[in-house]
Length: 111
Image (cartoon, rainbow, N blue to C red; front, side, top):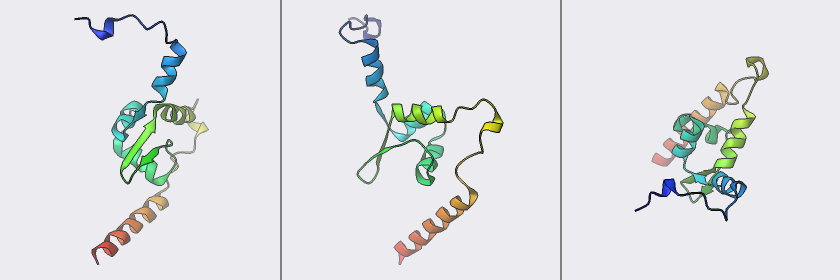
């Protein structure tokens, strides 16, 4: 039996096409976090508060990310020095508003 990892590349598929197909692969949130080398909770927070990579939503819970969108978002966060950026887009005020809104929703559901 031949190991598929040792097969030569398919001459019918150009390097450009295969790279393009890989870029359009859809990743789950844990896979996206692993790709970006950040925690899953950080990716979740970026999605909730805004400022993160674009994502796809299917149904109520299925969230997927295009690899190309993750790479584009990461490229936007490339700096030459610390004086070039202003810090995270998530402000403390935004976080507290989100938390208080969540608490209100939870108490409303219990009633």
